[in-house]
Amino acid sequence: MPNVSVFSKEGQEIEKIDLSDGIFGVEVNTHVMHMSLKRQMANARRGCASTKTRGEVRGGGKKPWRQKGTGRARHGSRRSPVWKGGGITFGPKPRDYSFSLPKKVRRLALKSALTIKFNEGKCKIVDSISMDVPKTKHMVEFLDKLELENTTLIVIAERDENLEKSVRNLPYAKVILASNLNLHDLFKYDSLLLTRGAVKAIEEVLL
Image 1 (tube, one colour):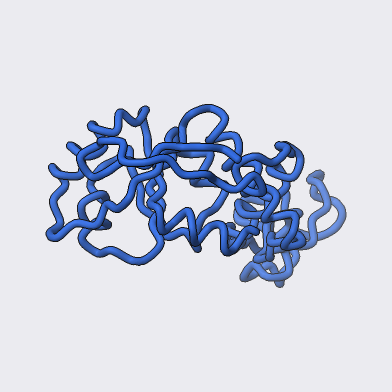
Image 2 (cartoon, rainbow, N blue to C red):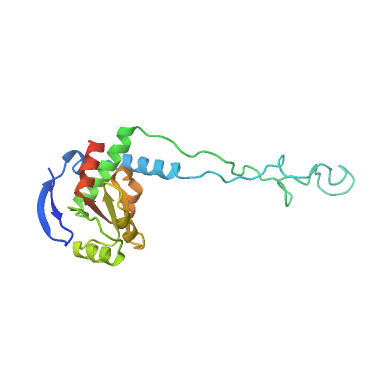
């Protein structure tokens, strides 16, 4: 089992715990991660872009000029796609881009991403990071003590309004619930900071 240190609010190591091999020590599957991330991005698309065809554009009832004898090209409507202000050929229409993947596949993708974070040494665990009052300055000091690299994704087990308010003004950090853990955020942020409760919540879902 992977063995990691647990840190206190002051950034001091207080103990070591074992993490599950079934989550932080699986064989990494890059194809599954690609498909799962592709699904997440596709499902987030609104798909509301819309254009009008020649049949939907207003006007165009009268033939612009007679068929023969003018020396000009033949046209039957000013709403033709070749005219300015005409319809759009093969333009976008509202559609649903989403697709589904089996639950086992999505879970394997998360396990693979968590394993990568752990193997690269970018995963740290803290006993607790709850705050009595929202204070961004205190959060900055806390992250500095843990010596986290660049951007940080903070995963907690339950909602903590004070913590969320303390982090939301930091462009390099984000707080999410363990139940909302996703590939996009795992890939977007360099470091992963988990609370002890978040680790337990993740194990309950993914194992």
